[in-house]
Length: 184
Image (cartoon, rainbow, N blue to C red; front, side):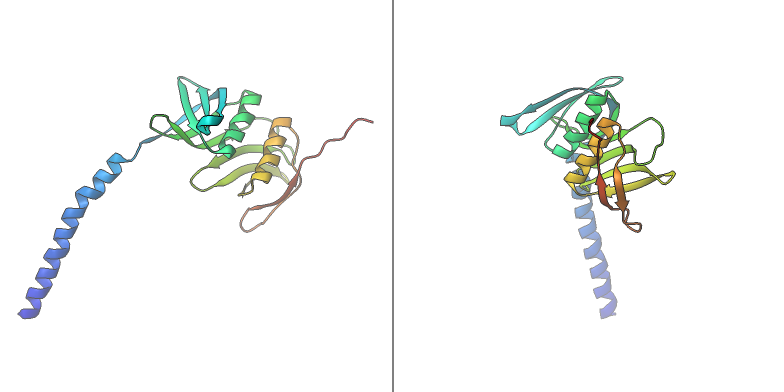
């Protein structure tokens, strides 16, 4: 009987702790800023040195005014801006709204080495790309800002990524270059 009283007290103590913690845990989620998605064309990109961020205005069915401190998100915004292409961004509500991710999907012919999609997400800190390789679209990724710049240049110039290789198991990009012939 003594043992059953101990078990009962333990069960009651655990139940009381769960009851106390449950409301606290659920209110923690309420206090976190809500996020959202928006699709539109970048129409204004404004870097402000003293603030340490870049303001981006996207025009879609409505308008989104948001900011980013992430140069890699800004890079893809600038590619879309130069091409007048639509992007889908993720953002966190607040004053100001902050961009957390971006995806640029590209239309066009599937040609060897051409980038068909480019994205970046703050949370995972990867640049993801879809590149046409050997007759199929391959989803690859890189953590390298340098490789992301090569991908962005290929998109902006509508040229293939050459010498394009990636690890077949992990899909991490291991090499890529852009190259143009100069007139003689």
